[in-house]
Image (cartoon, rainbow, N blue to C red; front, top):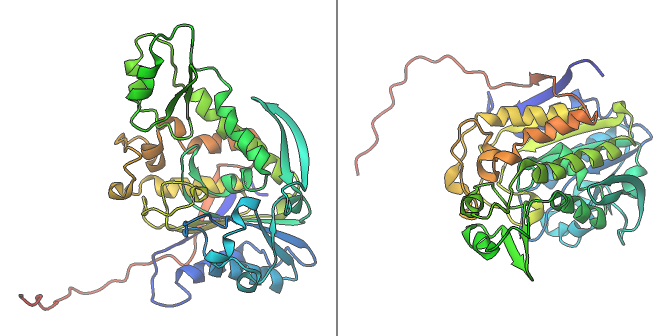
Length: 386
């Protein structure tokens, strides 16, 4: 791999009204430039996608995945698609079938979620990672992800798609619990902790049987609870939030360790960018404008480029749920403006580099860019008066 990772980018903007310059045309071109069809002959190829849940429909369209499958098969590869067992019961409602996609679909860890390989990590209460055996069995990895916001790490894309989506339910739940590992509440000092729960407008503070718990998954760090804490018994600090980010890097490292660098491909589809992860099971309005499609052989580079291209895009605040709150700090990435400063999406990039997943130093190559056409001044007729 070169010193600077190459990231190919195809914008939703087009120069001509033609299939070649359409979104799908650019998607196909990026698959070609990544040399996927030249790298899969005679090999088992895993395509990791998210199949959606409940009433959500903003995952990567089956039509696009089908074109990717066709490219793999044209190269002599043997593709199959995987996702966690939870997503399979309703996948057919979104068009994810072997007939539509052109390849088999398999739960990551088998039909009982018990087919896995294990690695000891001992990280903040998480003893082992249990990665699906159907991931381990492949020779080539293609990670195709829908870009969106994420209530725990700020955003979801290529890294998150592997970090959670390749593991058993037991592991995924334990990964989330790492946010509770670092102590944040002093029970002995607290005299009126019920008051703290009442100050949270988002219901992130739970009180049960004399104990207080902060749900860091949904906390946006508004600090109303800290302002009301006259006992000094509560802390809302970065450590608890960063635990989940770091364990995502650890789990992704375990996945990537099973594939040679030449056998890894990453595609981010940045359209229908919603505020929450697709695993929430519903689709909201777009909170950022459609961007396009990105592809790379470096997982860190493709996520970093995606975040960089979205950084200056306008947050569509009218589409942000009333269950969230917009922080108008212009220094924050748009995803952090709705999920909180401690959920800066670039934290994931920093931990990913720390664990050697790839490089944030990338070269962006836009394909089939939308080139402005020089035109003389127009003389449109005035609109008819009604």
